[in-house]
Amino acid sequence: MKSAVVVFPGSNRERDMIATLEKISGQRPVSVWHADSELPKVDLIVIPGGFSYGDYLRSGAIAARAPIMAAIAREAERGVAVLGVCNGFQILCEAGLLPGVLMRNAGLRFICKEVELRVETTASVFTSGYAKGQVIRSPVAHGDGNYRADDETLARLKGEDRIAFRYVGNPNGSIDDIAGILSEKRNILGMMPHPENLIEPLNGGTDGRPLFESALKAVA
Picture 1 (cartoon, rainbow, N blue to C red):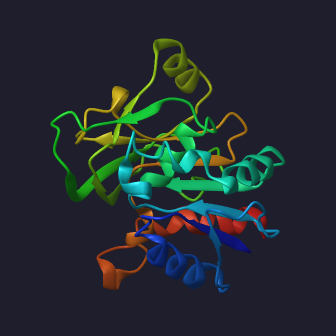
Picture 2: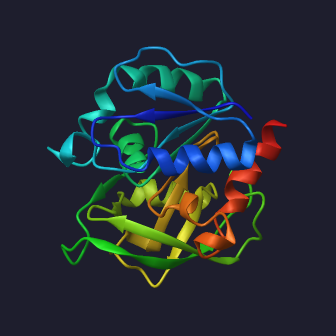
């Protein structure tokens, strides 16, 4: 699996993501700078976590207008898998590649802890390695993880089986306990928790590993 990790000013989880992808795929990802206008030919594009542009205006709002986002949109349209984690999820929403928006946590506090997620669908390149209804662990670290969407959008997400993960014990107030969603074509996943931080026992568990192995299997 050939992959690319997109880096913005303020990204701080790109090294974790690069290490994860290299360990699981056997190939080191290409690092792509936000000001680039083209992407190499890859099977997976990842926008990692962090605080792009210091979360000014609204988290992900400035990054969503970076030159690289047009290239990501083109690749996603032709079916390339795209994963946005934490700030990456915020950027994908702000860019219109996923519906809804991420707002301040309900308690107006930064949350940094391990949470439980329930797998809501296995019908995607990212979740096929899990069982529907399976509860997994994953760390979160965000101040703006409160997913919001209007009633029509929420109904579409539910009706089209596009809610990938829900929180078990909602930490941030997200509507319908949503922790991650899929695009209409099901090749884009945005999620607030960090699966890349639980891929081997030495780090405390492997609950995040099937997500990346599913992507690897899909392109193999």
